[in-house]
Image 1 (cartoon, rainbow, N blue to C red):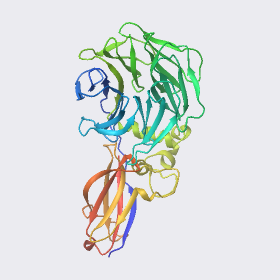
Image 2: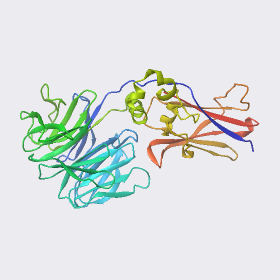
Image 3: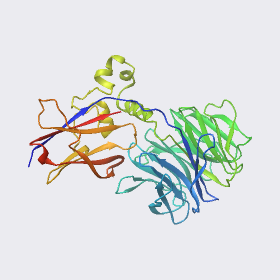
Length: 417
């Protein structure tokens, strides 16, 4: 049996162009999940004949829609983004109302109005469920931000928050409203809709008072679902009384606009999906891994934050660390990112981020590291790509070669973007 050595090499970096955005929403009364472009065009029904669908989130990394069935013996369902292969993800829930994804940690959070709980589950194969908070009185909508979970109530003007890990440090963030519905938090600012006052409001999370009225009245009557697009500075919302999907600016300037106003009855929750402008995803990864001062220093591009930099000196450049989900600031090798199986055929199984269509890879082989000649055709991909059971944001790829073709084999993975 021929020895096999694994070498990792980064070839270069290419940035992805931004893609168009899509809005997804539930209509609880018509039992629909629909989607459209941001102007309401290209509207389509994804799923129909659903039983009281409420909260919705779209995981573009897995190509999945999750929604809550708001019944006494309810469930969280999931399906492909085109509505196929729908099935129960987590069952036996008491009136689950709203959902949020924690993509970074591969978890889904939900509120169960009937049981007064906020819970979460892993998105991997285990689907392990943990309770964040108990004893709440009809929690209704929720949001996640910076290690906190925020929630509102069915019949209250209060927004609370607590640690998303175990519910510690619980506190009231907003009070004195009428009937708060959906919540969004971005860059230290909390946004919310108020059903009874027909308002959209915002305030600094750590500020005081009831915040600023961004928009009130007009086509706003009973605003419910809310989602932000910070890139364009736009808010999108659902209204169960005027029966529409609306849009307005996040800063309160300009006017409210009706995007979809026909064929709706009870539009409830809404999510905005950027079918992965992975230029933005990569930029977000850089901000998570490196300090603001480092990123602002062009002199550190080659050594710290650039795609070809290797700040931890482990031989894996930053774009490879991004592609495989490893830490660019730690030289600790994560064996789960690559494994070798030897037999009649040699198989190399490696992990690649699944949500970035701009990532490309090549597995090359040579029998002589000094010759500089690498073969791109020795290994070929076999089998189906499978979600990584530890983190659904990545996929496992299997490449296979006949060891008889070379007396010894060295392989290297080249990743570019």
